[in-house]
Image (cartoon, rainbow, N blue to C red; front, side, top):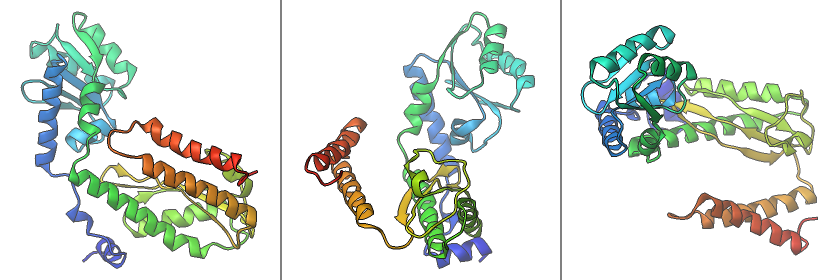
Length: 287
């Protein structure tokens, strides 16, 4: 048992080796990709770097073309490979075909391809890539759950060690170190007091004081899958006002969870929480 496995076992988590995307699953993704391409009239899709490339190939850096028929092409990322990709498309008889471009691809890639393949028709590949990625497999859900479990483990190891006078940078570093112990990369935005009212935090240095609200956000990465967990608590004994706000927020969250049902639009979840807060305001529970 290596160090990472030992720490994971001590935290009650399964070994990372037990959680991965099998090559057979990646092959199935490509076949689904091809079905969606045919449905959308695409002869191929192209992507460079990024999460979609990793999703289909397990590689995070490269230039990739998947044709509806035939073997895919993987080249080094960067402009030097763009003419080679255009040649590969042309050699496969797709010089006048409809080619899908993945949403995060650089404009320079699209610009080079349309210049080298002037008769080709270019379109968004999002219906294909999103059509595959938005429905998670059991293996993906397990990796997402692992990332979340590790985040909570890192938070639990850090929060009891907070002391008055610490800076938000100190706490961020402590959480990063806990992630390192668990064998993953992660980070955390940490803010104190009035800064917690800012939706995306602040770069200003802050020192922790008794009674401050502490907000921690972000997460870690496990095999390309990210956690993103926010935790908010009071350092010390909460005031009556803080308890009051917490109760309102908790009821709003309960309403959101109750509204989160299969088939419900995302806006319905948000609306349920907003209605609950508005009702508490009208009832005078929050002033």
